[in-house]
Image (cartoon, rainbow, N blue to C red):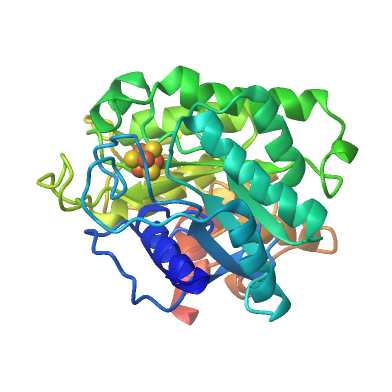
Length: 385
Ligand code: SF4
């Protein structure tokens, strides 16, 4: 197989496993069928700064010695595997980059001869790209379970983003998904290292003068965990180790794995988890504000922000001309930009109607039931929209 054939194979296989670097509607794991014929290994992706790039998402190798119960690459599973040598991949990528076909890389790998050994392969690739081949674009590099702290530090110096997939929210749940991995030592501890390194190393030691961001991924519903468990861990990571975001990939069974008969999880669960995690990260919500059901899950039919507002704002609407930013952010239909725009507009005069709010980017149909404009319930104006 030539290098492009290897890339097509590894990238197509990876797309089935990894949902990261896209938005909430990221591609999900699907019942695994090798897709050697898949042509597209470059994906449009939005970077943390909002820039759109052509991202090459691939594994360095689909050979793996681990036996994670949900994973198409688990040891012993019968399918055609492929492996790049670091130099082979780095040179191939640079050809694509010079042809303007790819601007960034998301690089992961199956594990062979231990996590530290595999991490070295990813590090070697990144070193070649950055130091020998002069690549200055976006690099998202995976931390391998079993990596050493010194490796994580070097990885961070070369990357724009690093990640390690927790897969499950705690030790007990991980046992149901990947009993060969240890939650605290192999998965959680590297996230702490990343934070320690970020705090102890000045930014100029990192390749573009900035500390890389950190993300993780969970298999939502893979271990019968609740949304409360997933969001408790996510909230802790965001508050304590600067996790930029968590990705949630709804469990979907894969043929020839121990979980092949487990029912797929409703993709709407992913969506609700993303909404809740953004409320926790950006909107001042706490876990106690989330409308968890008795089983610890979020209701699928309702946006968690709307559910909170129906319970808390229906009889106590927010006065648009006096509310503080944190109060505005609690109103459905008012986002981060909308809240700032309202505060800015209030400096020059009163907001008098929903039309003015709409011009500021507020989704007035959603917001109106929870707003007062100069003491009057704004929902009465909705007939105009
Ligand atoms: S370590 Fe587990 S999740 Fe990662 S590729 Fe191997 S089997 Fe899959």
